[in-house]
Image (cartoon, rainbow, N blue to C red; front, side, top):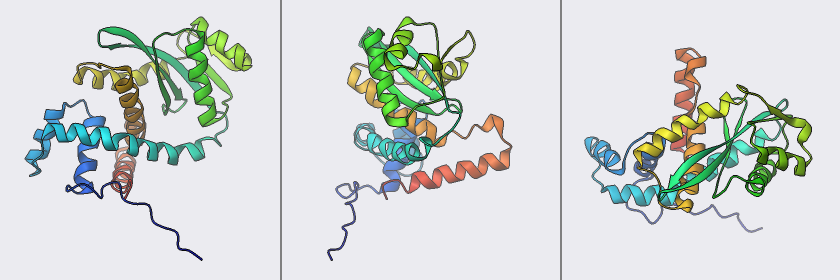
Length: 238
């Protein structure tokens, strides 16, 4: 019987250690830092790399790390009961033009899906909702704002009975926009829709991984969760 081969390490062609690469990607994606800020922080720790190396690492490994985090979380999230989603779209400038970033967040603040479109019409809402439903199954309720595109898309999917619309019901997803807005300002906006889609997806999964909701728990519990998240990050793609 042939032996199962161990997947090749994604770091095998790089001179730098996986620990340094993970640290650089985490600093750039998680915090509102520029590429040169990350270069300076690593230099203080005796790691001499160029900011363009940080750019290359995040482009190369950011989606890989995000995909692995999403794969681990999606398997057990499908079995949730009494699951409520919050859907909303936000304006993002791409090379001076207005684009829309659609985001789905669950009742605990977990960012489920991010999707970029040129318009916010029925077709865009339908594509976004189909993608989210395919990845995570069907929730018990879906909270949206009063945008007619949601109503039309929900009707097309046969989920009209699950839609909830209210003035303050969607605060959960509105508040979840704030970390991305802080990161967007640090990056001085985006130049292409593809780069926006890529970064939004990576940022969402990294944010989910390190989000311990520290305002809801005591400090010992927070420290335990923080250590667990850091340990799991250190073993990604190991």
